[in-house]
Amino acid sequence: MKKTTFGVIVGNRGFFPDALAKQGRKDILDVLKKNGFDCVALSMQHREASLSGDTKYGAVETFADAKKCAALFAAKREKIDGVIVTLPNFGDEKAVAETIKRSQLNVPILVHAEPDAEDKMTIADRRDSFCGKISVCNNLRQAGIPYTLTSAHTVQATSSEFKEELDDFASVCRIVRGLQNVRFGAIGARTGAFNTVRYSEKILELSGIAVETIDLSEILGRVERLGDKDRAVKNKLDAIKKYTSTKTIPAEQLLKMAKFGCVIDRWVRETELDGTAIQCWTALEEFFGIVPCTLMSMMGESLVPSACEVDVTGLLGMYILQLAGGTPSALLDWNNNYGSDPDKAVLFHCSNLPKSFFADSKMDYQEIIAGTVGKENTYGTIVGRIAPGKATFCRTTTDDDAGIISAYVGEGQFTDDKLDTFGGYGVMKIPDLQSLMQYICRTGFEHHVAVSLSQKADAIAEALDTYMGWEVYRHE
Image: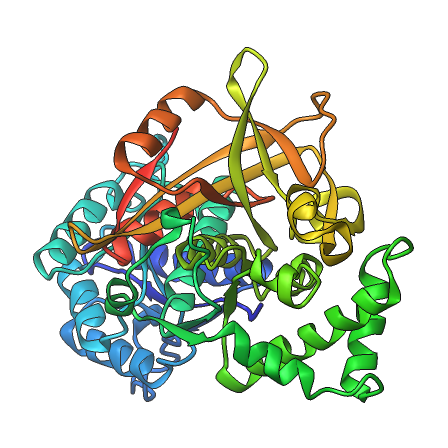
């Protein structure tokens, strides 16, 4: 993933100590560089006659400063993912708001204020950033500009706490940027029995999310045209064998998978898609003779997520998790209770989980439908136990009655509790799981949930609520 770039506004106010603005600028730029972020900021004025774009200490205090900073940001529009407003002292709230209005960036904004020290409260040392932050937020609210707050009202830019704030804010920025003009592919029709994964393309389109559709017959027609010795087919077959153990899989089925994978890969490239949702059963098994699960796992592992059962809004949840954490995501069923523990559930799919989810994995056949269509037609799943570790879950849906996108998000922990079953599976412990299940059922969410092996619920909730304007439930 590309390095996140922040536009930096250093606030200053003349009757507070200027040296604080000078040091504050140095601190924030040093911290950003140290933590792997790029930045766009005004340079410091080195002589009385201002250089182009320079201001006193590289801060924003006057209307003229605001115009310079806004022009700089506008010129770097394509590069800037978010804006950080840092207040080493009270700052000038009008200049900050004016900068953001004139830049017209429409990106997330983090408002940061440096804390005062109780032994440095004289006129020569005091910051009053605690108060200045309130004024900046007031002006942004008046202008209708959304913004993000740090967890603590004031926090040192050089602290470990602020490092965590930056990490979360970068996730917010990646989500908002990533959801601009995103393109998903829907391969095949929704399986008839799965009314649960219905969705509205029009509501998604209102949020800039496009869905490109293609009939499964067209995909299979393109597969039919591929030769067994086509170089792309050979390369795909090699990639499948390197990806997971295929010792028990017949060569005929592996060749079919390679051809199917080649066609999907080409379609994704040609239509510039960010992810896919596939009609994975049962027509594909009955009339072609494989399941596409391992191919979907490979796509997810390479950060091009692929969802089962043409669940496009499930795919959206996967993509959001991927943007937030920069790691692969999976789509699972809320499938079973785990004994009598009210805070544990079994998450399961048949499965197409990225292999990084597993402690160990292999390719196998799809046990659920093998009895219906024949074992020989169901090779291609990737199965194993999800490794213990922290996780975030997320689900999005289109609410046709309200004309909005709704979501829920929370965090849990995959455990090492004993479980003997098939497919891709794990036991997740979630605080107050029963109230979450009540919420899911009362609000009519789907039985699928997207999961990633990171903890990014707060950043996801902030991005979707504050900046996307979706209706979000954050489960605590």
